[in-house]
Image (cartoon, rainbow, N blue to C red; front, side, top):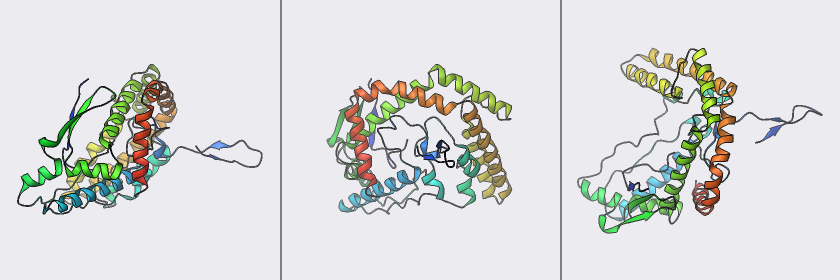
Length: 310
């Protein structure tokens, strides 16, 4: 789940469907899920951002940061984040359970190698930039000063510290609204807790075991539930070889990705992993959703207001 880009501003301290008719007289058949329909914690209460939406929000926040730096007389090269790739609005910004639809797998695999083959810039990492001659002044303006540091206790029991005079903090509140950091970290802690509890349920463990057996039968033995990591490692090695003039390795990595992803999505369907995760999450998150209704509503409202500015 990505909600920030850039320098380390927050010093986090842990203390504690649509349907389609099939013909006259036929019962409606549920449309196949989209890759953006993956299960996320509190998804019925909180907007599920796509990678494209998150990228555009990051770009907007960074422009606000640069405006703030300029107002403080900091001469720094503007940060130019690349535009999101073509498939960014077909993928979720956060996919905590690694769920994959068959339609997306056939077309894009995991979305790892395709953007590289198409020559699309990476938008996951922030590019380096010239901070000017006075790097200390730049960092102080960006991250704030200890004189304006405060510790915020979250309703979940954890706390974080933040410098409220930093341009990153000011930009976040300008884009998302007052108290944004408290709302964001409350959601993150609750959501991470939900995912951990869901993965520990017996029904999800059984579904994961069925999925792993299916993947092994398909020739992709994966013991830790991270088939995409195998693809990512091969793609990284292929990119290095492509930089040396060997494009065949990258094309081979793309073919491997599509093959693994197709089997992954099929095995998820056959093992009923989506259904197991959805059912377990509904049970796990219910008491937290009821207890923290106000905070979740505040976080959702902040995201919706920011999205309206896109």
